[in-house]
Image 1 (spheres, one colour):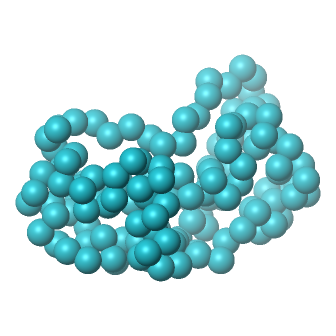
Image 2 (spheres, rainbow, N blue to C red; image 1 turned 90 degrees about the vertical axis):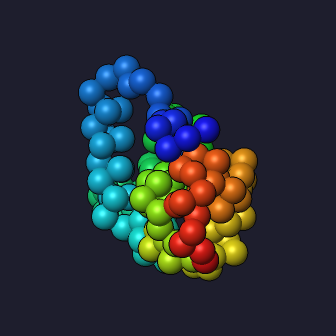
Image 3 (tube, rainbow, N blue to C red; image 1 turned 180 degrees about the vertical axis):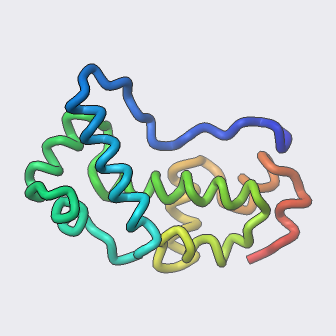
Amino acid sequence: MNAKTPVKSYLNIPDFNNEKDLNFYLKFIAVLEKNYKDETFNRAQAADQMLISVRQLNRRLSDLFEYNFTEFLSRFRIDKAVKALEKGGAIMDLSLDVGFGTPTYFSTTFKRVTGLPPKKFQEAFFGSQSSQKKA
């Protein structure tokens, strides 16, 4: 694969059947966008910012997506990391920049979600020149 190969999103967002679901999704994504870099960000904080209970958040997420909050947030962060890798970002730096507590946790999650460790992913999709900035 080369640098021109588009990389998919790992969130698997469904088509929304109504405006209520779409509005929930947009509000949820806005909350994640604002907070994903904070490694301590959690479900309770997200629910609080969305002005709903944790239980309501869990229900809505399970109705709309195939992932729970923690998995959705991890995949959201991985999507952000992939964009940084495309720009040649150093793996160790970007792992912390996207909200993972440690580079090891980032690498483990990245491999689980994408099927490849970050360095191999970067080399496969964006070429060896991107991987010269090593962790």
